[in-house]
Length: 340
Image (cartoon, rainbow, N blue to C red; front, top):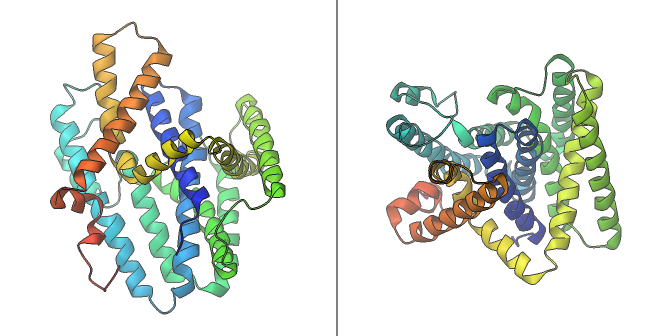
């Protein structure tokens, strides 16, 4: 099935923002931390959900076992392997690297239900895919989506959105996965190959961008982060943010060199997501220790370029070594049910 180019632009631009936001963690910038949790991660869940609906749901009833096997291999193996590697590295080297993450070897036994670092996304996505593959059929998508909307809204009535645990994130963010899956299913049925095909679509996305900015400013001014009002505003803010970001990336890609750079980053986005925390920690250590007076703007630019380029280089080299490539893409080597 042909790739939808706008999804690649979203993936490339989104992973840059993930790295940027995680770099900001070193400065304890609360607003940016909330930004990455409530916009960037729903964006990636939406992309994954769309692809699930676009590629997998249409054959969910005839090849469910194959789909589940593929998801377990492609997400489960990297999740466990890189979680173990992460804990081992930061257990032994945290005295040499400036990081906010502290682990002990015993933490390895808890990764089945307690994800570490950025790998919570893989854990949550695997849960979504397994649940969706088991319970979703073409006819009941809307029912599940309605339940996800209700769960999202009710959560914020009773709980704050400031300190979400991995379990609450799993509940709250499912709406974006299953909602995008509904959209992906619609696109597959109608054989659509682009997300933006008319100027009217761009105008709608521009309106969503304006609403996103307005609701973001409103949320910054709020003192309370619970209640049904906050719940509705948060939901609108995130959905409009995804649409607005698509508008920005689509128009930025009109510049050829920008589009080429974004697509290169998108092509290595899996490596960047898996590895970026190592590079951000190393860049922080090197810059802060050797240049204690470095300004925040230089720090962000240098760390961002160091992380993105470093991950791309590792990704490029890993493709040439089977063992390392297996860590990232085990489904290429474990074809248990034919071409998974």
